[in-house]
Length: 462
Image (cartoon, rainbow, N blue to C red; front, side):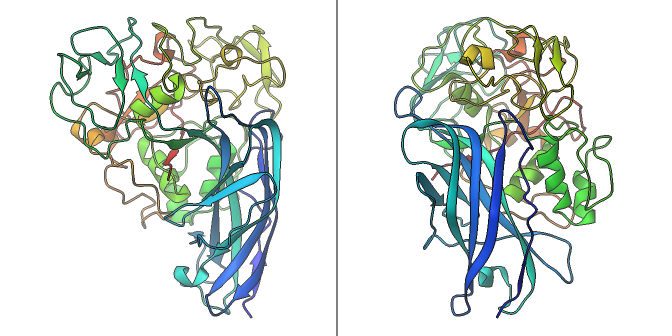
C-alpha cells in the first residue's frame, strides 16, 4: 500500500476576513487504486458572501480548487496534481466541474441564492501515476482554494462616451464600441474599433486574444499577502528567491510569514504575476476583460463612470484596526475606494464589502461583484496596444509548473511589453479609476517592481 502523509496546512486563504474568507478543511486521502494509480482526495470547502443569480448579472461566484503534492524525500518543491474528470463528487447544493486540462476544478452553487456556503463530502480523483508517483511512495499533499467570480458570455461595450483618456470608441465617433463577438477590426471609420491613440489603427485582432466576449473566471479579490507567501513557501528556495517581494515578509523560507495577511500584496511585477498564474493553473487577463468585469454585459455605460457604475466617488480617509484581519472603514462612512493618496497606503482586500446595507456604489464593486477593481493596487492587464500584447492567447491557462529559474515558460507571459495597467491605486488620481480610462494601458513595469502593483488572475471558462 502507498503510504500517504497528509498535510493539514491549507494555502490561499485569508484568515478571519469579513469579505475574503475561504477555507479548505477536513482533507483526507482514501481509496487508492493501484491498477489505475489513482487516489481520492476528500475535502470540505466554504466561503462567505457567496451568490448565484439567474437574472440581471446572471452569474455566480465559486472556488477554484487545485491540489499540490511533494515527495518527502529528495525535493522541497510542491508539484501540481493531475486530476481525472470521472468520479468527482460535490457536496449537497453544489456543482463541481473538473477542467479539461485536469489542473483543477470549480465548485459553485447549483441554484440561486446568497450568503455563506459550505460544501462537504467533496471528492476529487488524483491520477498520481500520471505525475510519476509510485504506488508505494510517501508524499504530502495540500488542497488549495481561491475565491473567483464567473463572468458570462455576452456582448458588452468598450468606452463610455465620456472624456476618459484614450478610451475605446467606435470609428470617428465618441460612441462606445459594442463587442458582439471575438472578431474585431481596428480603424477610425464606420463601426470599427478605434483605440483612440493608444493601440493599432488598422488590422484585425487575433482570434485567440481574450476580448471578454467569451466566458471566463476572475479572482473576486486582489491577491493578499497571505496568498502570496503561501505560494512562496510552496516553492523550493531558488524559485522562492526569484519571486520573493522585498521588505514585506519576515522569517525564513519555507516558513515566511505575512505581517498583514489580508492586506493586498504589493511590490510585484509582471514576471511575478505570471509565475503565480502559471503555478495556480490560472492566467493573466486583458484590458478588454477589465471593462467587461466592471461594466457587465449589455449594460449601457454612464459617461465617465467609475467601476461601480456611477460618477460618485468617496475616497477613504481612515480605517479602524489598521493592518489587522478586522480592518474596516472608519471615515468617511461612505468611503468606497482607496485613491488619490488620501489614506496613503494599501488596505485589506475587499475592505468595502460591508456586512449589511451595502450597495454596488458603497462597496466599490464591479457589476459582477468583483472587488477593488480600481483602487488599492493597480491592475496588471494584457494590453491591446502592441504586438506582444495582441499575441496573447487567452485559451492557455497555467500548467502548475515553473522552470528552474522560477519563471513561466508560456510565451509572452514574462515579457513586460505584453502588459499595461488599468484602474487606479491608493497613490494615484481619481480619473484612472474610471472604467474606460486607458491612460496607463501602454505602461508596463519593464521588469521593475513597485509598491502599488498587485495581482489579480483569471481563467478561461470551458
